[in-house]
Length: 572
Image 1: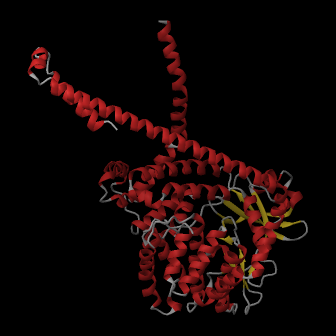
Image 2: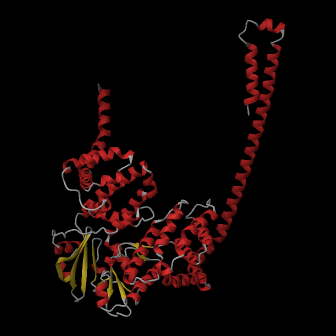
Image 3: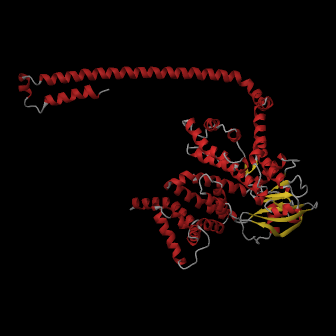
């Protein structure tokens, strides 16, 4: 009885964490999962599963959720539009995840990607706690000490943050951005659901592996959690502002770091015309051609010179200053998502684009392979032919009609056939270029992005190959070389010691191999001699005098013969 009691206690000890985990799942995630399934059923999203036999169980589950809605009217629009509406209803995580997926045009159907680009992050403003009380708590001081005025009515309200107008005691107009209270719990629950769904799809379906959904969700989790830390946005904004100090093409608002906190950001308030309001831009007599070309210039300056680019340049984050209509200036807002390329990635993008400009497709193929983006086992000729078949028909059209971002996207898709791994930084770059080109052609349809971009690419190549650039790299590494110079004798001695050790190890391995070879040969000789002896004894057993002696034994000749053959044929 005591033994049974101890086993029961042991089972209880192991079962307790399991019960806790199950209860935590039920309390934390199950209500959210049920709500997600209800929204999916209401918007009839099971249409995406038609024709997939392996998903019959899931389709059956969704149809059960649809039973209470059997007589309800189907929401308007095709299935892509209904997916967008469902994501907007589910909230911030799903909206931003859909926006991220919309950039993966190398995987998604164009119609679905276009629909997901329309996702809007709009929610009613929060009223409790009051903004004054919340701001004071986040600042760690009475709100009156920081602001002379703080408007309780929000200027804008999104799912993650809300923005209010304020005035500092010095009279400067600012905006106060605060993280929505309690949003972390919703984001945590939704992220866990997305992870589970991504892992399930990745394990069970080839589309999950092609989309690399697990990696997409992991990258997305980092992005949205970074958005919850406004100090990261403040740091990115300050760096972008420093990069474009006194620039006639881009203005970045000032950050008031003394009043900024992880969940609160205070920034200069700026006035401008929304870049999508073409009618207002024309009324202000803005030079639209110059404005469109400046957008391209700003992009390539960020990518090729600064290697630090605003990666969320959708129209809602861009204003235009009306101060100088003939030399218009952009105003960049919301620097929460910033992209940066490694030196190898930067070389990859710029040198490949230059090679495409020059229609040097073999060079494009070689660069892909040399940079490691495509397997080194890839045949250059095959890859070159694939790129040529993609680009040549495109270049038959006038340059002004060719989509720069579209061609880059098609290049990614073609390279994927050769197992190219597209890194998140390149996806951000392609998304940003897509926004810039689309915006530029909306402002000035005759925009020739190729003509505008080529001088920047040529200047980058010239600068990269110049002696001054080489000296600059040497100067940057010189302090490290100087600090490590006293260690060179020791490093040389250690290297010589390691070489000697490697030589000794190599000699030891050779000796062991020789001993093993001699042992195998000896065993083979012994086995051969044993086999011959057994065969000889088997032959002797066939002689009548010997056979008479061994007749009463069960098949001795056969046994000896089999042993002998085994030793001769199967012993190494």
